[in-house]
Image (cartoon, rainbow, N blue to C red; front, side, top):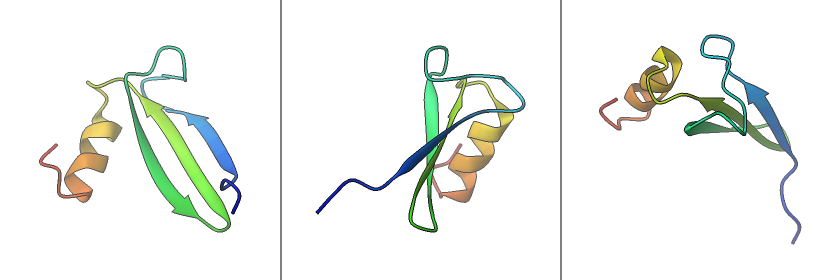
Length: 56
């Protein structure tokens, strides 16, 4: 069994990437994973946690 292909994205709001990001959201997409990096204070990260029932 191999690893799923992973696509890494930079948040369009906080501009975090793998080096500057403090948190990430992972989504299963067709045939792999999509990872987006965020700063902890990013509203997108907070929204992702709320949608995942993690209290933001």
